[in-house]
Length: 120
Image (cartoon, rainbow, N blue to C red):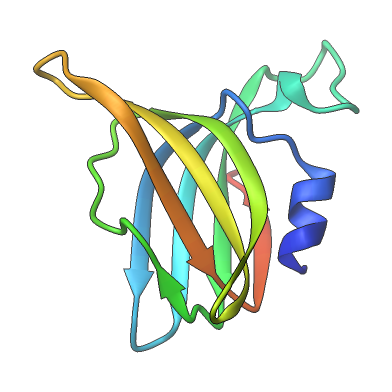
């Protein structure tokens, strides 16, 4: 699906970004997310509140902060941005380092498409 479709269909606020795997040669990136089902418009109480999902980005032209420290970093914002390479998606994540220091990181992915896959 297109990046714009992903943002329209899913709410990532309060979900947890667990890991990022980037392969520059294959031009792919995979984000592992502990996804908040409860934050979705179509959520039903009999479903689990969260589930692990994977965002498989294809035709990746670039990714910023690919080595950022992630330890269940909370996604506070997710939006479409225009970059030199075209359309991208931007995740703003709040981090909490083991030493108690926190902060905010912005991770931007410029990709041609993305697949939203639910872990089984």
